[in-house]
Length: 401
Figure 1 (cartoon, rainbow, N blue to C red):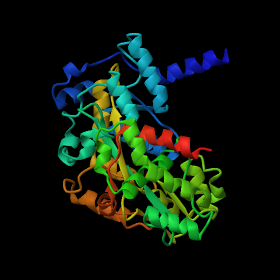
Figure 2: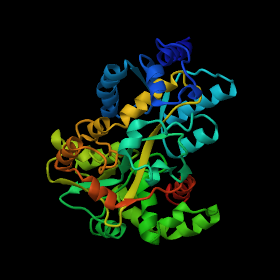
Figure 3: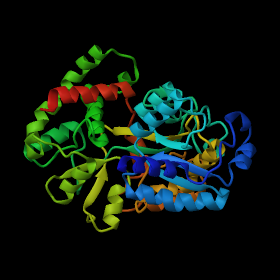
Figure 4: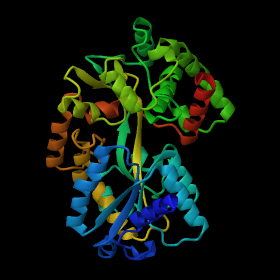
């Protein structure tokens, strides 16, 4: 009985007070069509809900702006990507033409699964005015997501980059990281693979420095060829392991646990993908102003995250209005604020007006914040999604015990 009630409540949350499907993509020839068919609707977005700052941004700033601008009611439903992919796959198999979700937050291997499974509407990006006016449409991450051709099936929402934080100064390369660990045993670590995104990124980013090649990871190779390339990288992490916190016998399970070790003074460095997180913690008094953010001299992995419309979304036009607003310079600069989210904007800084540039400069000048210029100059490309999967598997085989 309890299980039935949970399922019933979820169905009510997803359905809400909404109409049936109002438009197909064939009805959306112009932006005027999108506006006229998308106003005054409810948009249900399925997205990871594990960060309260992001939740507040969506439920407050974004929800209020959409209601005021288009009469749209935003219905945010916390759901991890594997859950909503399973849901959409089941709806596809059962022939459900009108589903309950209008938008999903997606990228990388989840995008690959959804695109290959015919779970997304596309191409959808050609009509978006903010994308046309404020973005570099030739940028790699507007055309490829972890090596996967986008072809208009998802729209960029933001960027992220692996950023380190330490008191005063920290190691600026993997070579320095190892030397620091030798000189200060137990004072460094990284979060555990395969579950934590930042930990996986820290390991795969090492491939670029240790092998001295970035482009090879955009090319085709067999699993066996990849394993041969991985040997010196895995050797590095095997040498590093006994020098880490708790002698490498255990690793923090999440980025949040690594942050906690840093706050408690148990380790000297933490890392993550929210470029404004450290600035926000300094502003709130959790960190003092001796904490600085930095990237390695050899660069750090950067990736992007996206929005997509499910194949059977009831309110495709309203979903497109929501995407366009989330891509607006106003919404992008708001989420960059360390007190809001600390997410890296995806617009082209040469295409935005002076008000946005002034707001950008104010954010970049906060203690603990890196500038977009500093980040992009040291931004390493993301690997292909299948190589990321192989790295997780190889790390488990060599390191997990």
